[in-house]
Length: 636
Image (tube, rainbow, N blue to C red; front, side):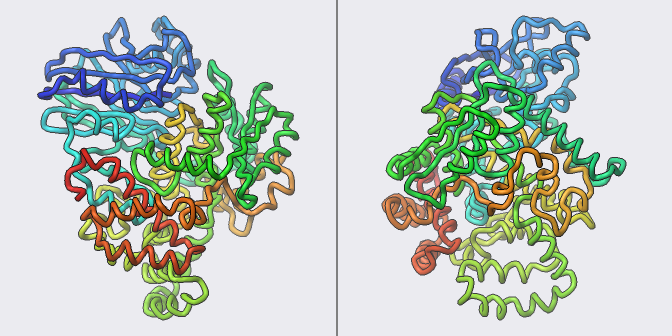
């Protein structure tokens, strides 16, 4: 796990100095080693830098940027290729020779053998910048689901790319005007929706794709190396055979994710996903360790007892990391400084990674992705049900949406009533229903802030114009469609992005075996009645595949994760943090200050309602703006 940065083209400033500045702000991503390289190209200069967190091949053999002595191709690589040993054997059979034990060298040799088709062969998480010396081309590629981040800015002088947006900012080679569409999508969903970032000039490389740039840094070609499987495309199998195949793929994925030259831990909660990962990891590796963070002051947010019981059952060395409220609050302040793009999520990842790092953990497996792939969210039931109801009685429900939501307001509160109105008014459009289900601010609340989808240049769903939503919506397969939407949007734009930034802020590599490509491709190719059977418990297939790993107490508990009690803290110990953030947003010129006041007033009236997430979205936006004040024109 690392941080990568690169500049290609003819810039007025020295690209070598600029790329060093970019790498400097990513030191926590790779405290173990630093490398840089520059070379002249027909289009100017290529400068590359790499910050290394040594996980595989701890020797200097893994140093980057790495050059292939045969082709003279150069790579900077962030991530892990878990099947690198199998690929290495295959490549050796094709006549390739190797000088190191690193997966980075396998990336170079695979590209030499297969070109851009190599990316489809990788099983792992990665972001790659690769210079093809013979063709004079730079390739940027990202893993199938976007576990590792990769951002770029195409300017008139050339291309700048990095693992973090703030690294691109540090180059001082890119215009830093705020993207108002990004602000609108942040407030709509709690995170900036890809490919937007907070800067108009900077974009995110899409998951499962590669870009090719010429020697001057202009993007000239793009391609996919991952496509969403079609449900029911494989020959039908008995449910028992499906469960057996899923168990085998889960086992293979966890075993692959244990590949490392340093000890690997598991973040263990009381949930199904991390329990599955811990149990399968223990079956593959005797010396596995598990870690659970416990808030001693918050019994409702404490999973320690059930997690510890799980560890004892698996005979795993287990560590409970007690975190006091003062410590957690201090870490929240540090996390706000570490954030790359503003988001309402991720503080839990910062805290658990920080606690684990203080116990010497460098690599940890997480159960992230299980909810999206196996159907753990209420949306898997809610959205199809709403879709069916609105398909049958849509005009009637739309006509009465205002009256129904007003009638419900005294019972469910203003925040939920506003969402109910938007849902009823949407009609039988499954993608639109899903996005309203995921929304923070309602349309009316955003209008009070001076924001509409139209004036932000977004689709009515508040998604970027270039996103083709219908490619993820499958006729007759509403639950399968929800799985794709949750994975492509909530998981990618919020959970994975925040998980990467906040774990790497603590120099901890978090791996997600639930999102292995082979496992995803199998589960998402199952027909909906098999993958997400109606009337059964959430994650029915996962429960069946891992039934030997679960006990009744774990299966019976209500769904909960490691949640930071922000809704209470922002009324008390974080009050000054809230005030600072809101004041900055009021001054920014990006939203109407009256909307900020209205959000705060509603929160004061309904502090236990979901309105706190809307308020926190404004707070994190304000703190991002405050941090970028000196370098962000147009923010007030």
